[in-house]
Length: 523
Image: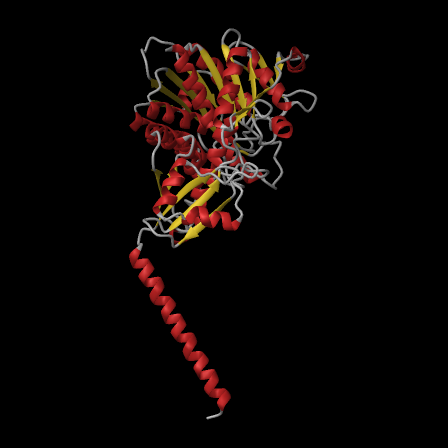
C-alpha cells in the first residue's frame, strides 16, 4: 500500500476517534444537565483606575467558583458599560453558564435631562441582556441577580425572554426559561416586577396576534380568560346593545366589516364600591385598513396592532388585580375592524353624537377618534368616574414627533401630567406632555355645515385628535395617551429588553405605576 494512502487512512481514523470522543462528551454533558441552568450577575462600570466591582451577589458567586469570574473578566478587559457582557461556560458549581453583564456607573440615579432613573433602567438592561443571552444558550432555568433594584431586574429579564411564537412549529420555537431571583434581595419586589412584566407581555401577545386570529370576538374571549380568574368583572356588549345605546360614531367605523363589533366593560374593585373609579378607554381596532382611504400595502400588516390601547387596558387591569391595588379601576373598550366595503363609512359623512354634537368625518383613515367619541360620552355618563385615561394609536403626528422615545400625553390637569411624568421616569417608559392649545380646537370646530370635524388642516394630526376628545370631556380630569409611536412595532433604537419588529405592549407598566401612585396618594 502506498505511504500517502496509509497516511490518509490514519488521518481518517483519527477524525473518527475525535468525533466519537466529542459525541461521548456531549452525551455525558447532556445526561449531566438535562435541565441546564444559567445565572446572570452584574458588574459596575469601571471608575478610572479603580478595580472593577461586582454586585453583592456577584461577589458571592465569584467566591463560590474560586475567584475565576473576576479573573476572567479582567483578562477580557470588560469595562462594565450597561448592557455589555460576557458568557462563561464550564465553571465549577451548579450553573452551566454564567452571564456577567455591565450595570453602568455605581450609584446612578435620576437624570433630569433624560427624565429617567438611570440606575433602574441600567438594571433592566443588564438583567434583560443576560437573561436573553442565556435563553439563546437553551438554558431551561435562568437565575437573575437582583442587583440594586430587584423589581426592575425582574421586569427586564421577563420582558427580554418573552416572544410571540404561537404561529411557529413547536420544534422551531425558542423555549422560554423559568426565571428565579438569585442570591440575596427583596423577593417581594422581584415578584412585583414579574407581575408588571407579565402584564406587558399579555398586551404584547394581544397586539402581535394576526388580525384573523384576533377578531373582536376572539379579543373579548381572551380578555375574559385573562381577567375573570383574577376577580375582574367583564361584560361583553353585543352589536344589538350598541345600537340600542345609540353609540353611532362607533357603529360608523364598524359597519364596513363583516365582523360584528363588541364593547367590553371591565371593572376592578380594590376598595369600597362607593368610591369613584379611574376610567380607562382603550381603542380596540383589531385591524385598521384605513377604510375607503386605504393605507399603503407596505407595512399595512402592522395595523393589526391598532388595538394596542385596549390591550394595554387589559394588561393594567390584570396587574392591578395581581398587585391588589387599593382603588377602583374601570375600562371601556370598543372593539371592531375598519374595512372598505359597500357598507363602509364615506368621506364627508356626518354622525350625531350622544351629546347632540355633529361630527363630520372628513378623512375615514382617521377612524380612531371617531370610534372613541360616543364610547367616551357613554362611559362618563354610565360610570361617573373621577378621572379618565384614554389610550390608543390615534395619529401619525406623535410618531413623527417623538418616535419610539416616549408616549405623547395630552391632559387638562397639571397634577395628572406630573404623575404620569414621574411614573415614566420610574418605569423607563417615558411620556412627554403635548399642548392642548385652543389653536387646535379652533381648527376642528370651524366648519360651515357641522359642529366638529375628525380631521383638520396641518400636520399636527395627534394634537387635532386630542382636541376632539378634549371637547367631549367638559368637567373631569382627563389624560390621553397616543401610543402610535410606542405601542406598535418598534424598528429604530429598540430597548434592549424588547424585540425589534415586534409589538411592544408599551406603556402598560407606566399606566400601572401611575395607578399605584394614585392609590398611594389616596391612602
